[in-house]
Length: 478
Ligand SMILES: Cc1cc2nc3c(=O)[nH]c(=O)nc-3n(C[C@H](O)[C@H](O)[C@H](O)COP(=O)(O)OP(=O)(O)OC[C@H]3O[C@@H](n4cnc5c(N)ncnc54)[C@H](O)[C@@H]3O)c2cc1C
Image (cartoon, rainbow, N blue to C red):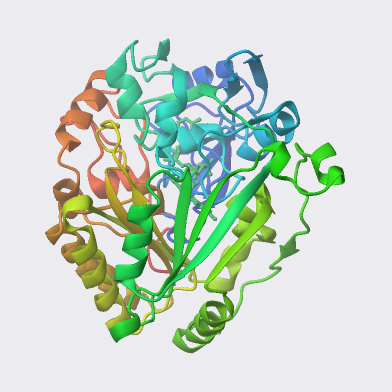
C-alpha cells in the first residue's frame, strides 16, 4: 500500500510494521531519519498524515506502529554527540542502541544506569517507554536533558527543571509528545563488567516475597517464576541477585587484566517461524520442572554482563518461535499494599486457564519518587509473561485478567501491551488527565499518533485525528 502526501512525493517507503511480538501488524510509510533537519522536513511535508518516532521496534505491541500514516525511523540517527568523563554524562542521538553504548563505554569504565532485558533497543525508545531493569529505578531518573522537535516545528530542551511538564510526559509518553532527537544520560561507573551473581531457590510465593523483602539493599534483583506451579508450590521461583564485581573480586589475573571486557558471547538464530504448537503447556511444564529441579538451593558465581542482563539476546529472532500469529506479553504491576494477594490471585487465574508462559519474570519495585504521569513503575511487584497469540483465545483471557489487575489497583505496562481497552487503561492510570493536558499543550492537533494512541485514547482532547487508512494486513488478530 502506498501512502501519498498531497504533493507528488510519498513520505518514506511503504512497509509492514510491527513490534517485537509481531502482533498486531500494520502498514505504514517508514521514513529513515538521518538528521534533525529531515525530521523537520517531515513535519512540513506531512500534509494531513500523522507521524510517530520509531526505534528498533522492540516494544511488543502497537506502540511504535502508525497504520496508514508515517513512522519516522530514528535508527540512522546513531551518533555520539559528547561525553563528560568527569560526570559520566553521555550525550547521544536518539537512534543510538544500548549495545553501541556498552561497546564504547565499558572499556572506559562506564555502564548503563538502567537496562531492559535486551541491549538492542534505541535510547529514544527507552526514554519514550521509561524502561526499567533489574535495579530499582527507571531510566527517567538518570536523564539530565532531552532534546526534542515539537509538533509546531520548534526545537526544545527539557529536563526535570526546564519544561518539567514536557519532560515527565515524554518519559513513558510512548513517543506522543514530540520527537526525541538526542538524550543526555548519566552513566554509572564500574570497576569491572562482571557481576557477582547469586541464585536462590524459593519453593513457593511466600518464600520468594520474603527473599525480595530481604534483598532491598541488593542493587539488582529479579526472579524467574514457574507460572504453571499450583497448590503448595504456587509461585516457586529462582531469585537472581547481582551487583557489579570489583576488580579484586575477579579470581584470575587474566580476568583482572580484562576486567572491562565487552562480551561477545556466541549467538544462535531462529531462522524461520516455528509451528505454533511447539510451545504449549506440556513443553513449558517439562522445561520448568527441569530448570527448577536442576537449580541448586543456592549458587554464587561471577558472571559476564551479557549472561546476567541479556540471556534472551543469545538467541536472535527468538520471537519467531511463537509462530506466524505472533505473541503477546502480559506485564502487570500490583502496588505494594496488595502485591502478595494480587500476584497470587493472578497466578491462580492464569494457571487455571492452562495457558503457559515460557518466559515468566517477577520483580519488586521499591520506594521511588513519582515518575511521569503514565510511566509504569510505582512501588509494588510486577509479573511479566509471554503467550503465543495462536487462535486469539489468549486475548479474551487477558481482558479478564485486566479486571483482576484493576481490582488490586494495578496497571499494565504500555511497552508490552497490544490488547488493553481504553476504559481499563484510564482506570489503571489515574494521572492520565494530567498527561492529556500536556499532550494538548505541546501537540494540540495530534501530529504524533500511534495505533496504541488510537486504541487507548492517548490523543489531545478536542484535537483532530486523521482516520487510519485500511491496510491489507492491518487486521488485528491475523
Ligand atoms: C527481549 C526483550 C526484553 C525486554 N525487557 C524489558 C525490560 O526488562 N524492561 C523494560 O522496561 N522494557 C523491556 N523491553 C521493552 C523494550 O526495552 C522497550 O520497549 C524499548 O523502549 C524499545 O526500544 P526501541 O528502540 O525498540 O523502540 P520502539 O519499540 O521502536 O518504540 C517504542 C516507543 O518509543 C517511541 N519512540 C522510539 N523512538 C523515538 C524517538 N526518537 N522519538 C520519540 N518517540 C520514540 C515509539 O513511538 C514507541 O512508542 C524488552 C523488550 C524485549 C524485546
